[in-house]
Image (cartoon, rainbow, N blue to C red; front, side, top):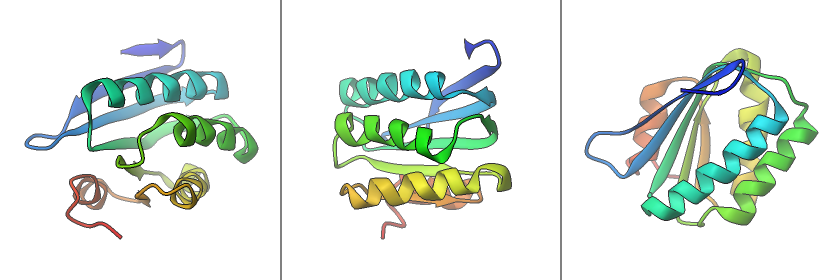
Length: 130
């Protein structure tokens, strides 16, 4: 479903788990990330989710690391601490994913970045927690 002119989000949940997933496809700008982060936190609270899994492999991030910190701030402020956060990255956005998960980790979240779906899914399901 398009959420911005150049960005599509495929939303789904993992079978047999209370995990919300989003696959981002296209160009993601900071204003879109900020709005989506707020909506995602609201949804996770409303649906009482255990984890989220965000797949950025087909996404080009058009914001700096400093702008990405703003997005992380939304999660830190609005997301319940029990929620596991699992990110799948491509080589082009690996640093963003690593930076985000470190920031979330420092705030008390179980958050990790992965280069493949299977490992990210295991972590989101709680089978591979740090």
